[in-house]
Length: 403
Image (cartoon, rainbow, N blue to C red; front, top):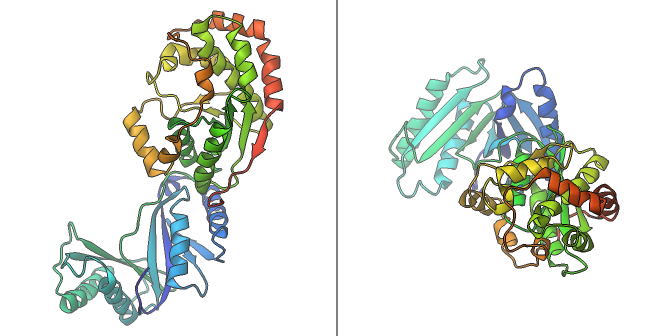
C-alpha cells in the first residue's frame, strides 16, 4: 500500500469463496481457515487481530504501517480458501471520512494519471447508516469526478472504488489480487504425494492442497547409485509448496538397491510398472503411519507410456488406499502453466539424475497384465521389501522462506 495521507487504518479484507456455500458445517471450515491465517502470518513476525463477517475476514495489524500490512497481505495471498486479498482503509463511520479516504485512494492509483475511467461500488451492510448504498456511491463518485476529471464507466471501469459500510466502521479499497481459492488446507483430511523431481507431482500436490487436503511428500532417490541432486531438488520443491500449507514433511527413501532387485526379477518391459507398484506399496505404509487417507500422483492420461489406462488400473491394484490423480485430464502445457504460476517450474527444470532412468527400458509396456506383475512381486517378496523401504525413510522439514 502506498497511500500516504488517508484517514484511517490500513487493513486486509479477505473475500471468501466456496466456504460460504457450506451448510451446517460451515463453521468448521471457517475455524480451520482462521487457524491457517494465523499460522501463515506468524512467519512474518507481525501480530494480527482478525474478525469475521458474512463472507469476509478482516485482518488488522495493530499499530502496523502500510508497508507492514502489505507484507501480511502478500503472505495471505498463498492461503487456501481465500478468493481475493484486498488492501483496505478502515475509516470512521461517517460520510466525510469515507469520502476523504476514497479520494486519497484514487489519488494514488496508478491509472488515475492516465485518465482511466472509474466506478464506485457501495454496499451498506449496516442498514442503520443514514445514507443508502446508491446515494453514497453517487455522492463519492461526484467528488472523484470533480477532483480528478475521470470519466464514469459502470460496466468496465479501469478503477473500481469499493465502499463497505460495516457494523462499526467503513472499509474503502480498490481491486485486490486473486487469492488461491479452494478450501482451507486440513479441512479435507490428509494425503501423501509421491514427489519426483519433475514438473507434474508438485502441481498435483498444489491442486490437492487447494481442495483442502494436507499433504506429506515421499521422494524415491536412486541412491546409492545416483547422486543426492534429486533429493536437493525435491527438498526445494517442497519448500516452495510449503507456503500453501506450512509444517510440510518430506520423506526420502533410498531406492537404488530395490531397483536392482526389480531389474533382475522379471521382464524388462514391465520394470517401470513393477517399480511404480513397489513405490505405491511403500507409500501406502508411510501414509498409514501418518494417518493419511490417500496417495497422490502426477499421472496424466497418455502423457508417457506408463500412464495408459490399462497401466493405471494395474497400479491401482497394488494398494488398498485410493490413488488420486488431479492432473489426469490435463495436457503438458496446462500443467506447465500452473507450475509456472506456483513458482515450481524453474526448480523442476533443474538437471538431476532421476531414479526412473535406472530402469528405463527401450520399449516400455503400455498394457501391463496384473498377473504378470504379481509374479514379479512374488519373486521379490514385495510386501516385505516395501516394509523395509518404509522403515528406511529419512524425514526432512522444508520451511518456506528458509535458506
